[in-house]
Amino acid sequence: MTTVDISTSLYTEVQQFYSRQMQRLDGQDIEGYAATFTEDAIFDHTTALPASVTRTGIINDLYDFREMGKNDPVQKRHYFSMIDLEYIDIDEIRSTVYCLVIKTRPGKPAEANPSCVVHDVLVRVDGELQTKSRHVRYDSDSPLLQGKTVAEPEPTAQESLALPAAAQDLLFREARTANTFTDEPVSDEQMRVIYELIKFGPTSMNQQPLRIVLVRSGEARSRLVKHLLGANQAKTLAAPLVAILAADLNFHDELPTQFPHLPEAKDYFADADARAASARSNALIQVGYIILGIRAAGLAAGPMTGFDADAVDQEFFPDGIHQSLVVVNIGKPGPDAWHPRLPRLAYDDVVTSV
Image (cartoon, rainbow, N blue to C red; front, side, top):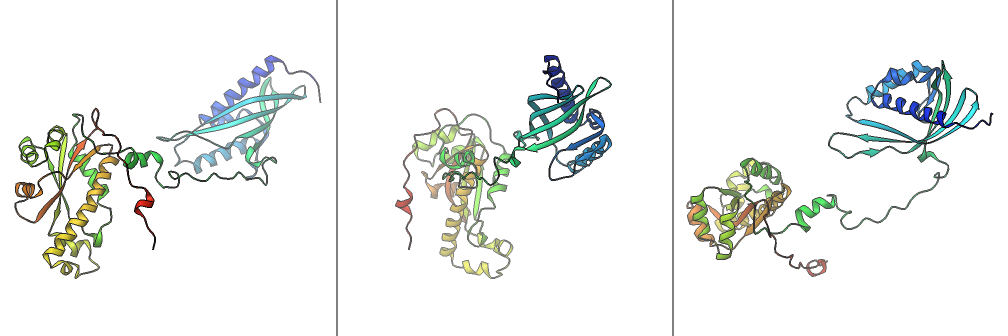
């Protein structure tokens, strides 16, 4: 082995060589990339697979890899750094390089492959650098790590839930009743998307008594607002959309379709009082779902029960088979939309075990 020092010009040349080599690889220029290896090159890219032997073998293996990943839209970037060079002979150089591969897929954050060290032998062919051999060793296989583990931290209360913390905040912790809204309209399509999500929430015997009246016209808004408590009137007049959520007392007519494995399900609700009680309780369950659906759509909900329900029923449901439960203002939250968060009962105040 020679002890000749590595010149600055050679180091710069190797950096330029690796830059061009990796850009060809990342650009899927397979032949151009393979041309940076000698005809008899060996490429040992992972201990899990046989090494690629000869330039032709490298080309064939790369095409095989590309075919296997053809359904994975990914852009890879290979970053070489911390290059250490050592002469083996006057025309052979041993190169040790740290490598990091970053992968980017559409609509997703970039992610890194496990880091590795690349051990190359570089030679000159007709005055140009080429790779004679390449052995890639991943840090996960390092002897320093063998037989060792890192204790996983205990998940926090937020992390123990399936939803990410941001979704938990959107639906619960940071959400509250909105009292002001912007002028941005809420479309029928937005409401359709919300309903198509929340309709899958469970109810007793798959009862679906919730009925929704979207109050859009000024005339209908005036008819509704006069039956609200005074504190609820101004914000309801200003909301982009108002919905009356009601219970259909004849929900049982749909049970042969909605609960087909129990043909006699409809007969369980022959008694009018029992039917009305079930309609209200299950519709109120669905009210909770629709409030969460509104929040999931990036909108704010302002649910209210401060209104004359009998008068609203006379105004909007004169047939007598629907009972209004909740009025909800819907839209993007406006300035000073929220009152301060009020206290909630603690777990131990609510939950007992028997």
